[in-house]
Image (cartoon, rainbow, N blue to C red):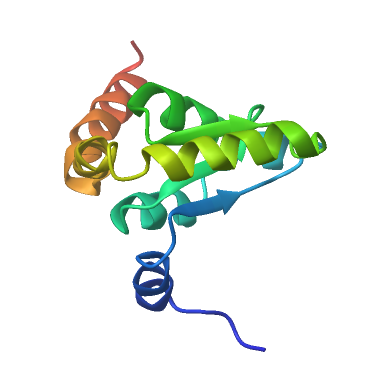
Length: 122
């Protein structure tokens, strides 16, 4: 089976109420991961379900675009998914705002500022 292209994923996600991103925080990479799926699910107007112990949770919580759970607790995960299904359409405008905020054009000046400070020795 071959990988699904980015445009195909976003198109498919538009039919889903919830996009799931679950990385067990068993190594630093998984703890700090910020996968493309996060932006793609938000762009597709799907709520995001992620671990409550990854970098994704910061974006999901700050922008209120989904929910967090502990993947090894089935009852908690089920409850969170059901809650996301109920509020999915209500949070649509928040996901649109979040997507615009996360767009590269909006983040590029912030990144350039950090690089400028580092390179100038501040």
